[in-house]
Length: 136
Image (cartoon, rainbow, N blue to C red):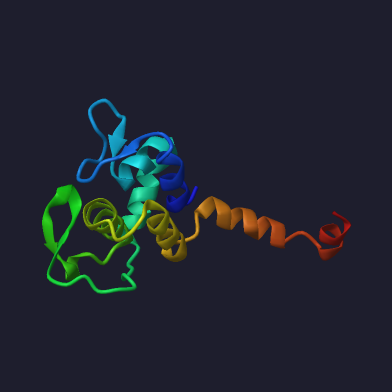
């Protein structure tokens, strides 16, 4: 499952809440809370993948930015997909409201690494002889 897909599914399961991973009653949370709610056992692997994947925003946030737990951090620290998602959700979707959750999901989809299972599935399809593809 892709992180963007997990956010999209998770938002149907919990209500958005800035600065809180998941509420005590598990009915509200941030973008990563949405991933947690929808991804089940795949959550840890997805979060680790995002924590090591370096990315940059297509625009510059200047000065201090809202990061994990609604704390202020410096923009140069926000260089992983994980932290970019935290910042975009907390600051731009929930606080400034200059982004929508759909825009966040679309942006994540545009930069996230391919899901390992999806990659394996594509590889197995590409190994099928052309005659089989055309016969289907």
